[in-house]
Length: 125
Image (cartoon, rainbow, N blue to C red; front, side, top):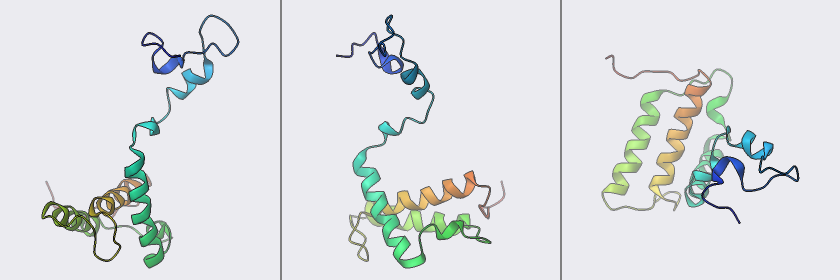
């Protein structure tokens, strides 16, 4: 059983080497902590992406020549968040959470930024 002293990097095992050192846990501690994303959020966001894949094609924003426009996704995210805030939990078209659709839109923005493909049409500073 893991104790508080062992912390996240050690994982509590010694990998059979003795002394408590776990090289796999040490390597893992330097990677993205995906375990911290709530599974319900991932599931709901995946359903929103599924609807988008059916409507527009999977990963359509990554196709050659496509550059997602910041304002388009910003507005879509705001529409979903404000609909949710106004009391409409589920998107009428998909039957899925407006918040999941907002997460999907933000995910596309983050992906486009990461790949250097965002058409940044935000207002000037």
